[in-house]
Image (cartoon, rainbow, N blue to C red; front, side, top):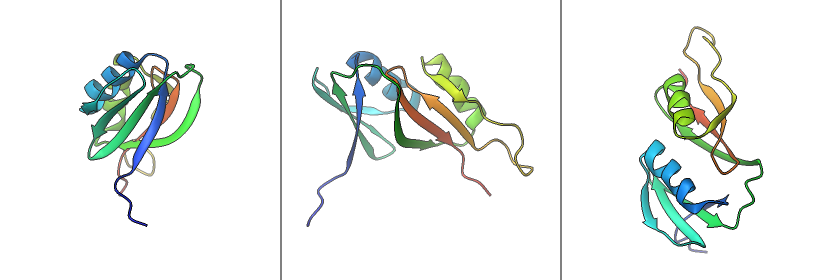
Length: 116
């Protein structure tokens, strides 16, 4: 089987709000936009955003690795997201490496920092 590309799909009740969140916060490039399905590319990964979502809290498994989780968590909240688990202080002498978050559409995501 030849895989042509991999796309991760999220649901959105408000397509404009969802696209703005991923474009502005993560520097994504909107490659396709419609009321039904849109695509934003973040660090080479395609995130499909499907309209018709109900805004319910949904675990996605989607993770964004960034240099500073504390700074990223603050930016996420400023962009309209929420923190489910704030970055924890010093872990084994290292800065925090994880923040559990939710986007404005109810999709649960993670911010992580490379450890070690």
